[in-house]
Length: 323
Image (tube, rainbow, N blue to C red):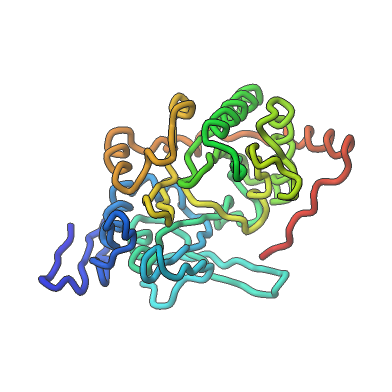
């Protein structure tokens, strides 16, 4: 529920038992669609349980656009100044630079709406949670199309991903990226460090690559066929973040990273899921990732594959250091 004055210098939104002030609510964030800062806040309210479920207790980088998506983009690790005391954080360390950062750590919807007030459009969480920051509980399969790869190819490769996951007995949770690809998430126990989760992700990617000539795990961009889908295992490295489920993306069409049913994957199109269409979809279907925490997969088989592959082909590509 919002109350607005005639000149709308600000408005207040009641979010649970919090009141969140939205300044400049009429500022246009998506010029091609005329969507405003307040529209963005209302979008996140419409998918509230879903966005909180996607971000809950995860360190989260905020992608902020103070003047809308055509202006400056700020990738912000540290929580912006002036946060209410009910906005929670988690302290992260970055040994490479001898730095720490207190990142946003969402536990309730009001914190998401406050982030919108701070001009956050996209939410990019870690694949670990604050109680075990160095042990991921989410394995991420990122299907990243090359420059000459169409979305039909991405969908076909995603079908192979589903086939391998099914053989492993792993429950995968697909979503569009909100751009040109597909993500599939798998819950894992927080028992392994980032290095081993990344090794497991690479082993899985190599198995998919063996089954279809439309996928590649080539490490260097210059070595990749631009018509293929890159299985970006490196999204499981420490401090690598990708847009969460239900996150809006800062493109002209206001596309959203949308959870999917597996039976939707063969025919879906990224443009089907936007700030304008997702509220109705969510009202009808609810959070399609609601059961993700109940389907935990043990990485042991993939770590065995990794040992096999490393013995056959040599070392894993060098892992980037902490950012």
